[in-house]
Length: 380
Image (tube, rainbow, N blue to C red; front, side, top):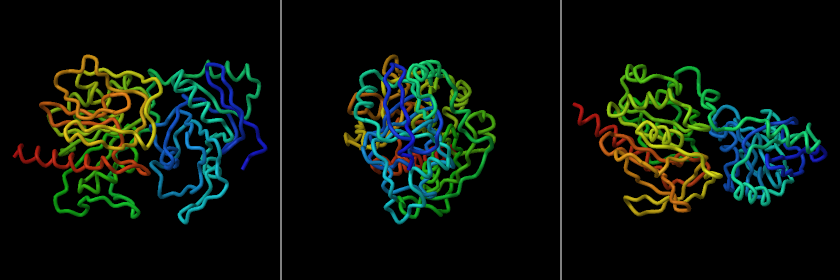
């Protein structure tokens, strides 16, 4: 550990927090957000949706079970920085391959420990998510604040182009041996699914395989004509980072796919499907990020505890008549899911694939399979 190396976190409002270096020395800029999960920090580190963000964990002890290659949600971490109250120097788990500090250093991620994260989160909840920086280099406070205020905002940036794959590929890997769902891997009926990758978590693709799909992953810039030429029985719209507004190429593609194949979207895919249908999106004050977010299923009246990670949402204002809200976030009543009234398409704002996270919402993957098979039957 680098307890002897001082580090700072600075916010654009002029607030500065002192601490010690965790991970790689340097300076990193990003939007400072917080996550309320008690576990799952490695999934957070490797989720491409955190591109351009510095994540502060609200739980005070992070890193106690270390890191391992099997729990990756992507091949490398994508977030800009990591903030914790206390980092465990011991990785107490039989699956651990390194400590959190070693993992961050290996991947060049700058982090900081010893921060009063309670005060930091209260500041974000009051003022909203802000631009910020973690540094071991710019120790003059005035220079540091000026650098933060000159850094880029997430609004209007196409962060998807920085995390999506360059080439199409076939995905065959099922769910981990540590968690197997009630899917039907190995079944004879294998509908072909095209997954549009805007920064997709790998566990989503694993769940699709677990449902018996033949999964083909394509970059988020792939056109509707290219996708339809692959003759898929369904199209999945993945999660991803940042503002959905600038992604006109994705919105246009989804518009051209509507009604031709069943669609299922998660997180950014939810927002993009909404925009393609004529809805609006907006930036939330501080977003929803955690593994304990309550969502009401309006059809079943059951509450699902969900994992969420988003700073933008589909607006209730001027929601087009073609969309029916199916899920609501119980803390603030924001739209957490919808379906198209006449086309085979639905989406949720949260993450049913989450690992580590609750499993309440994994039925959505089998719901997608049922929709695909029903659409196939009706088309014959």
